[in-house]
Amino acid sequence: MPLALETVSLQRRFGGIVATNDVSLKVEKGARHALIGPNGAGKTTIINLLTGVLRPTSGRVLLEGEDITAVKAHRRVELGLARTFQINQLFADLTPLETIGLAVSERLGFGNDWWRLVGSKGEVIDEVVHILDQFGLADVMDARTAVLPYGKQRLLEIALAIACKPRVLLLDEPAAGVPEHERHDILAAVAALPKDVTVLLIEHDMDLVFSFADRISVLVNGALFVEGKPAEVARDPRVKAVYLGEAADA
Amino acid sequence: MSAHSTKTVSHHLATRARWHPLEILFWLGAFSTIWLLPGKHLILTEIVILGLFALSLDLILGYAGIISLGHAAFFGFGAYVAGLLGKYEIIGEPFLALIVSGLAASALGFVSSFLVLRGSDLTRLMVTLGVALVLRELANRYSDITGGADGLQGIVINPLFGQFRFDMFGHTSFYYSLGVLFVLFLLARRIVNSPFGLSLRAVKGNPLRASAIGISVNRRLVAVYTLAAGYAGIAGALLTQTQAFASLAYFDFDRSADLLLVLIIGGTGYLYGGLIGAVIFKVMQDYLSTLTPQYWPFWIGLLLVVIVLVGRERMTNWTAPIRSFIDRLDWRMRAARE
Image 1 (cartoon, rainbow over the protein chains, first blue to last red):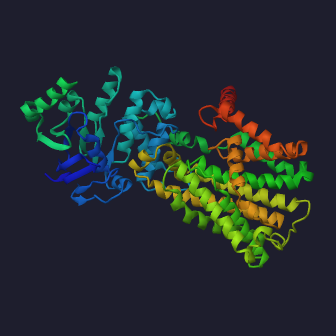
Image 2: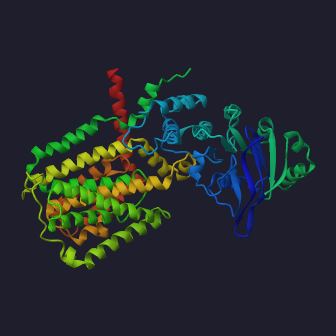
């Protein structure tokens, strides 16, 4: 299988702390790959390295075989790599309609158009309508994002990444903090992601991980610890030790 | 099947771009002063120029979140370029000179924008302030060209379009300034309601996410800073042309600070804030300075304190209740019609 996303000996230090230690991760095309690990294992640092928010101290990041280590964050989006955030990073003063419209028009190359009114491109609108419907946001499309219920904001978080039409999508704890009665919508949205999009899921919630992933990597203290099929990882005594150890500490 | 057609959604998306009846009323009011207040054209010209200058600051502060304490740099630069073009008769036609001055200020804005991109709000305050101080001292130092502390004198302003002489009552000045303001306002209104304008609001709201959906944050900020500098330069050039004089005071910190005050009074992020603020500021200044020639800044200061206290969360918030009242009224009127 060709690789969608790969890291080669990726390392990142913050002062004396090694947050990411020699990580060589391979994510196959079309995979549903989960990255799990106890708190402080360095999962979010890896996401930031993959998306270009942080620069690695050493090592490389490859997207579909192409070295993107030196590529800026916004350019990586154009190359087909998008992400969601563990803590919502939305535009509080914009509506979902404007938010999705912005991402779509940006991707189609109209983002710099200053002479055209928003909403004047039919191709943009068609896609926006489609995405809003797909994520159940059509009924709140005119509300300010700041006043939306948390579950809807969470859906918008994913919808916004999908509006960038990524080939590789990084989901950073999509269900984090979502109340029980709104959880189903999020899980359904994650399950319904297009099959041709490669997904790397960073998650705490083991139910979600084992229902969703076809491959799991376990990160401990910044380094890859175990990798394999869900059943293998679940059986692995070392993984149990790490999680039980954490539970015992807590 | 979707509940929304392309047409209705496109209509929704362009809601902000539609002309509100109050906006039309505002401009009718502004243009009616041509006939209604012929004796006030001198001060009205000053108001228009201050309004244009404040509109320029609103473009970067209200739409892109760039705070500046040195916006007078571009105002002063535009003013001196227009003055030098007139004095040395390089470009005799005032309107052409105005455009050239705006472009020159834009170029300066473009270059200095790379300094402004660095760092946080505090850094930006210092950098913008620094740029204005540097320009002021340059104008002071090269007094053989600029006139130094005496100001730029002997500026020749030819009739506008070779037809309209600038008169001592300020009639031509006022028509000219108001026309320029209106055209530049229309352009700004178009820009803030474009995909580019929407992306600016996204960059202001959350630069991290903006770049995560593929927006080049820095490029957008450079673009809007360059545009705003051009607007400020044109405002400065208008002042030079209507007064046939330019002075070092155009670069002063006071001018940048007053400008922030104007925007705080009027509110940011809806384009009219600068214009309304300019009217209130100038009228208050005019009225108070006849009442108490020495102490009028006291009242302006008091007003500022009151606005900030009333505004609580954001200093620009105080217009929100009025705007939401207008929105409700608007909604009722529409409901009544249907």
